[in-house]
Length: 215
Length: 316
Image (tube, rainbow over all chains, first blue to last red; front, side, top):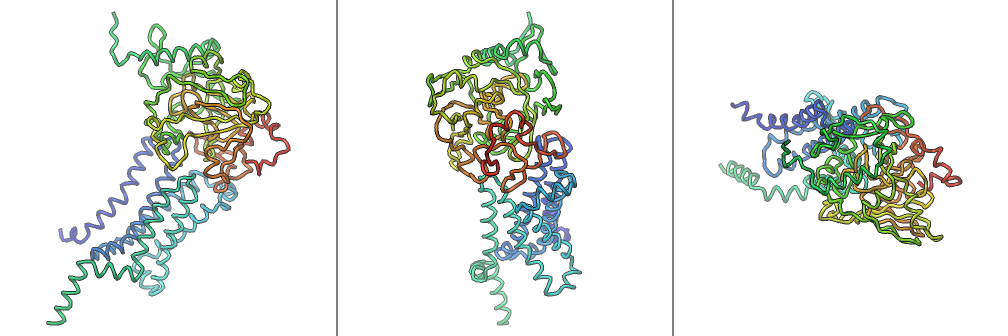
């Protein structure tokens, strides 16, 4: 029970992140993935990766507002799941859609900016996933933090990748732009200060600390 | 006496329109078509209430290149029809109650004999025939569809275009109360498309009124839509109410929003790349591997002469 009290957020994250995969698999086996299943897999895995990436970046703002330290530990998990869906997205594209026909891929894709930024985002996520273990964190020291700041670039490139593919109606990718902007705003020191000073839990902690100081 | 349950009785309106359609399709179809999975009651009348695809009729199961027809289910469940939804799979449901009768088409503009036709007259006046065509969507997927329809040229000859007429402009019904997508103010409705007069007069260009031997279902552009098989699918304007002969090149729906991506001509061309993705290959719905896209969608012998001397990279 104590274990669950410590890890309930982790459990919830695992379940939430895996449900879409289960549904995808179910729809695949029941032939429910539209008349163009490869496209449907592509669209679904892409949007799951993007949503999980936004959630990864959402951990810090949630922590700032709520003070729940446990939330910060979810970043790694959410980031790994985002990478997993980005990987499925990539291999569906190269493997199923283009049948590993690299001549065709080269001529079809590598002049296309959406593909280039999408691939770049995937490589970044892959590098971050591979170095996400604590062992690497210790080994890389301060550089680990620098490296992992690249998640902002990955998020930006992923949204660009989406934006450059919609036909004309850019409303959905623009929603992601707005979400990303809000999440990034929380990282601006001045804004962070305002949120800190207004959030009750921090005030309470500060008061507790000052009482301790007095004592 | 045989008992017929009330839900099995076809509303008279639908019954009559079906009959007229079948009369229009004519003796040719009745004598040569292969019924697929035919479900008939004893007196030969189609059973009402069955799914669209349960009873279909086609004369052959491949196109002239030997490519197999796309399944009826895929054709009626995977539709780009923004008037109902931007989701291809939502169109069939959202268009279920779309009213296609009564329906009139006004043919006018620069013509000597303007014409207003209702669907029954149109079906009676222009014998319907089967045309099996490849459809290539600009999004790089494709289908092979057994349309039922007639050459647009027959209709255009009847209205007698004047010498100033250079282009044909088509317009879809504007009915936001029936077409929920048209409530979306992001787009400027109704949908408009156009053809150069010689393209419109080409024998391959048809007005389609049916597919798989049956009247078009709403999601596929009922009751009448354009089909121009050597062009990208977005040219195939659906649910047409107005056809005008004009002098100036019409600005089509997609041209207005992204002229650098969707040109007026929109001829299928593997060498002219879409600014954001390649057009050199496509995936045929129902298959896994990509195939090479053919110039003019495989109809180059018939239509390439329409564009001699034109820079197809410039006039995309």
